[in-house]
Length: 317
Image (cartoon, rainbow, N blue to C red; front, side):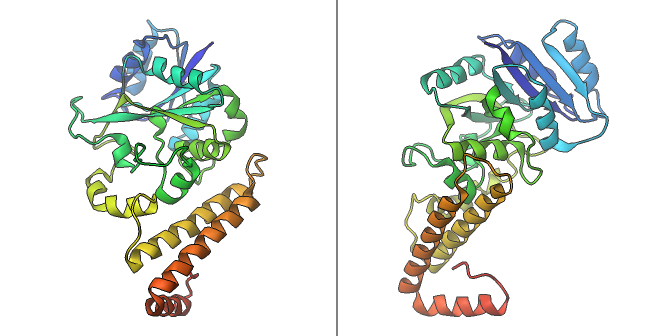
């Protein structure tokens, strides 16, 4: 069994050495670390070359042009040769037994093609600065959700809950996740496809420390909004019942967007996605929500429908 890491860098000099050392110091040894640098202008490359001298498992690929995060990860994943591919950001810190525990999840779930985990949130000084985890920040209430979890339903309606920095995939899925759609971030693309295949699994443990800092490219920029959005998200996830007209409107809009998200995959002709069957299912869900809305709020339902029609909006009530 060969283990690979696909790691992407861009001006990551502040934290990259600590991250790579945390990967090198795992309880189960990583065989190769493929690093694709997207034209860093700081000292990232010199730090990587210094680490390379004592660690031959590192391979450094310097992009000739800046391709941005999604395509950079596509390139790094494509260059890996391992049976299992761990994705990595440049500024986090892995727990020493991350690899071991992720592999255990694969072992316990033979159908798994991808496994992700929870994570601590740390600042630039490596300190945990909040009692929230990365799952809290993306509204993944794992302990409350009905099992087995319908991951595509959650991703399409709630937003992506699989942080790439925690994700490990099997080499076999490279055949259909590449090329990665430029309409999606790499982790959302991979997670959505595995969710549709019913092969996405997870560990509830915090297996990395995910760093929040001012210079990161993506990060949890909405962390400060989590408390304000919690009630809305819980309704979307079916953890609380809708009571107000706005609650039902949010639900119907999200189901409409879920259908739209599914249709985005139709053009790729994936054999494992029965798009037509799922479209019918989502259409029935949308009709049921509209029926309940009309029954509970008849006057407002009709007024909103008229206004949407005048404004040229598709009826999403």
